[in-house]
Image 1: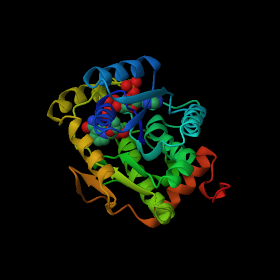
Image 2 (image 1 turned 90 degrees about the horizontal axis):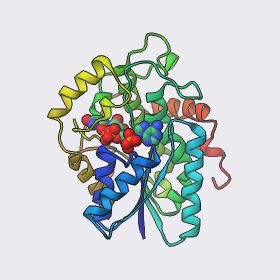
Image 3 (image 1 turned 45 degrees about the vertical axis):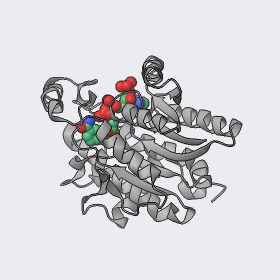
Image 4 (image 1 turned 180 degrees about the horizontal axis):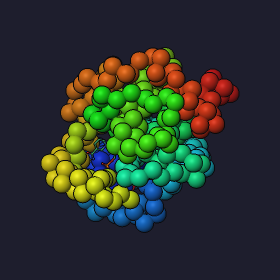
Length: 286
Ligand SMILES: NC(=O)c1ccc[n+]([C@@H]2O[C@H](COP(=O)([O-])OP(=O)(O)OC[C@H]3O[C@@H](n4cnc5c(N)ncnc54)[C@H](OP(=O)(O)O)[C@@H]3O)[C@@H](O)[C@H]2O)c1
């Protein structure tokens, strides 16, 4: 059975994307933050489609150990269900913060969840993705344009600006996708970034306060429905001939920052490997 893993599948873009793929007949393995929200999301999807094939796992993807645990659970699932093929991993979970907040490892939270969690989870599921020539997709953002990676202080420990840290984490999504394509296209694995546009979700109202919360409450009203980016995810995953651009919006290739270079992608790859304590090329099967 065609199977898709979606992180952050309990609300907003991830939930709607999970719904679209279950309607298309895929088995969706959703990952959420809390057991309660996973249960609510699962019921939500099943209420609308009794035949939906949907299962949820929960983990705090900001924490390295939790990401490793969930990856093991997913790998065990595929070992037990050998005929299920991992068609795609959608790294969608994300957050916005108002203040400098860190994970247990001391990493800035937006960088940790929006970038490092996907970096680590992709690494752990890479063998399966290579086996099934799967796609690796990211929910990016147009906000990545106009900024550079702050290489000497990637976690913004000095002079924290939450919006700049968020934008940088979204630039990381594209750099990582490019890094994956440079390394794994020859294995039939293809990475893409979906730019969802402004979407009416609660992302800016979770664990935020002050101006960030207020601005998002006003701004999100102008956002489109999560169904819009979900359609682009379906478009990319349903193509028989793989589209060969990197960045997509509204089911079409779109332009992205000139900061997306091989040099920057390689630097981010090396930095992320160090921070996650992994090495993509030292894996046994490589
Ligand atoms: N909304 C927009 O306009 C917009 C624009 C550009 C890009 N994006 C990107 O779209 C993605 C999805 O955001 P959204 O707007 O759909 O917001 P959302 O509704 O808040 O969805 C975020 C998802 O991530 C999950 N999550 C949060 N913290 C987590 C953690 N520590 N561990 C595991 N899961 C966690 C959330 O779980 P809970 O349900 O438990 O909170 C939720 O399922 C993000 O990557 C965001 O950067 C959004």
